[in-house]
Image 1: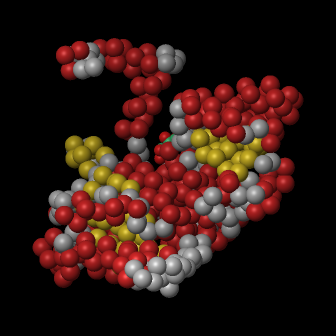
Image 2: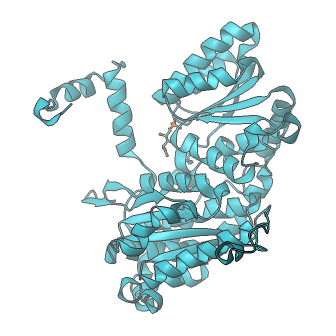
Length: 465
Ligand code: PA5
C-alpha cells in the first residue's frame, strides 16, 4: 500500500483532553465491528455496488480503453456535462493525475483539452463555447438519474449547437453515461444512437468515480485506469478486518464517530499539501457531507447527524484559515494529506547570500519546503491541542489515488452505519431538485408547486438595499 493513515494527533497522549483515549475506541468496538460486518454482509448489494467495482469491470475497462484511444485520435477536446457525483470525481482525478496546466500545454504534450461543466452559470457555458470548436469536441453527458435539470439543460444546449454545426454526424459527438434502467438520457441515447456506458444500479453518484463515470474521462486523459482500480482493490483488501487497528478505514471511521458524537468536533477540514490533490478535497466534501448529513436515522428518529466538511489547501491556507485552526474553537478535525515524493521538484536557487533571512532557503527544494511546512503545521495544531490526522501518500499516481478514494469511501460507509443513518440516500438534494422542477412547471410536480406557493412570503422589511 502507498497510503499510510497516521492518527497519533487524534489521541489523548498527544492532545490531552481534546483527544481520544484507547479506552474510548474499545468502548465503541461493538459498533465498529457491527459496521464492518454490515458492510461485508452487504457488499455488492443494494447501494453498496461500488464496493465490487475494482473487481467486476474487465469488459467495461477493455471497451473504455479502446474508446478512449479512438477519442484521443479524433477529438481535441473532451467535455464532461454533469454535476455532483457525476462531475467531482472526474475533476479530482484529472487534477491529481494530469499535468496541472494540461489545457495550456502544446498539443503534442497532452492527450486532449479537458473541461468539466458542472454548473448552469450562463457566462461559464458561453465562455466554454468561446474556446472550443464543437466539431473537434467529444461531450460526455453523465447523469445517473438521467433527469438532473442542470445536466439535461446543458445537453439540450449542446445538442442544438452540434446539430447546427455537425449535421448528420452530430450524435457521434456524444457519449452518454447513465443508468440502464431509468431516466430520460437512456431513452434519448437509444433513439439518437449515442455510444453509452452504464452506471450500475448499486452505485450512487458520489461513489461512482471507479465506474464508467470516472473511468472514461480518466482513460481519455491517458490515465492508467487499471492502476486506479488495482489501488482501490489494494485498499479494500487492506481493510479486511473487524479490528480497527488492522483496518485503516475502520479506524478512521471509529475515530470520526467518536470525534463527532463524543468530542464535539462538528467540522471536518480536508487539507491536502499538494495542488494535485486540491480537488480531492472537493470530492471528499461531497462524499462526507452528502452521505452523513441526515435528518433521520435508520429507525426513523429525528437525529440531524453530520459533520460539516471544509476544504483547505496547504500551504496556501496556512496564510488564511490555519490561524483559526490553531487558535479557534476545538470543534474540528483537520485531515492533512501529505505526499512524500513529488513527481517533479524545483530547486530553490541561490541569489541572496548577503541576506541570511532569505539565504536559509537556498539549496533546498520546493518539495522539501512544502513537506517541512506540512510537518510544521501538524506540530502547531498538535501543540495547540487541535485534533488532526495525516494521510500520507508515497507519491501521487493512479494506484495511490485509487487507494485514497477507496479509503474515504470505506470510511464514509462504516461511519454511516456507526451513526445509524443511511449514507447512500440524499433526500435533501432531491428536495432542491424537486422544487426546481415545480418552479419550472414540470409535469407531475403540481403538488410541489402548490406547496411552494403556500410557503410564507418574504417580508420586505428584512431586505435592505
Ligand atoms: O451523490 C449523488 O447522488 C448526487 O450528488 C448526484 O451525483 C447529483 O445530484 C447528480 O445526479 P445525477 O447523476 O443523477 O445527474
